[in-house]
Image (cartoon, rainbow, N blue to C red; front, side, top):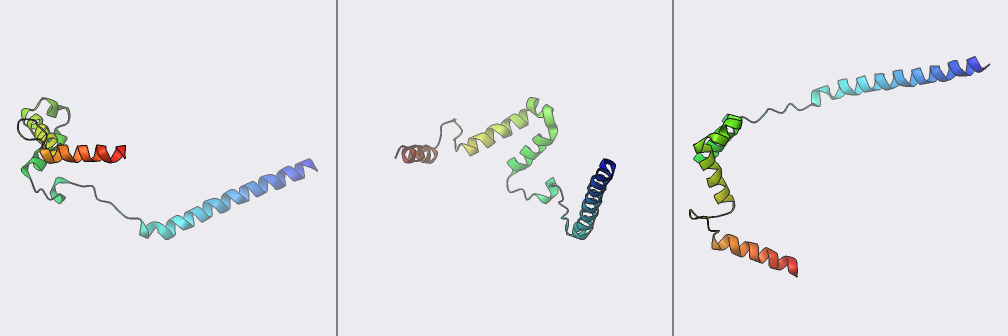
Length: 109
């Protein structure tokens, strides 16, 4: 009698597994046409508005060699200066400083 119960339980587990695999395969086939293929970004599909952008992309592709390349170091320095809105002397612009002070004042309130 115990063998009969064991076979019944195993049979139900196998049936559930087969149903799961069958339903999964069916859903995959139904949705196969809807899978979106994403093309990787390449330099050719990026619109470069600034020569600095092209230089930064070139440096990215150089890998570790870019750490020793003078042009890459110059491009990164220029990019940081633009990000932090600094002039050629390394001093932050008045607008950037005012924005920082205003945001700090807002946090205190």
